Image (cartoon, rainbow, N blue to C red; front, side, top):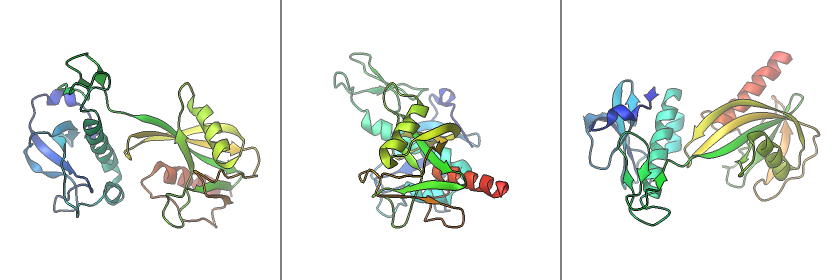
Length: 258
């Protein structure tokens, strides 16, 4: 597992390395992403320890044949999810915050923590994390799944959206569900969370009980939605996603009740 203790890595310049390029993540030649232990090149950023060995990530142009992050999320064991997610988000942060958002001066990374500081105005920048809700709406033994225009053909998933300023997660659940499919919900219950690295979302998973089954699809973010039962499901999201976990957990509970 990944241990995020970068304070003890100040001055460390060797260990495992993850190479992230424009098209994907480099294979280590053995079906994984951790390059053999060695000295890190300039520009590598330490992100913690992997099984007690220091690990860093390097952003580079890369090669077209490097497999995309989504491939690795599905191909590697579940415990690798946090490693990939951290590497991708730190790379994005380092790329997007090279200059001060207040005065435009080039930022300097502070050793021992995920923070950049402006030498001119002291403005600080931390990795961006965008809080989101992701919700499985249910009606008795049925689950509401929807389709975004961006999804692969045939795939349906749970509803999701960003939390707005001043809004609680539960308020966001009710708002997003009503905006996207026109359904009012009653009880809202928390499930679990997941850090989603495309590009920097923090997904908080919820179940929401529908007050009615009538749907009014917004036609913009959602192009189709319907109620499904366990024996009649559409194409579902990938197994490594929290959306899949919400669905599978509900289906197990539904089967137990039956």
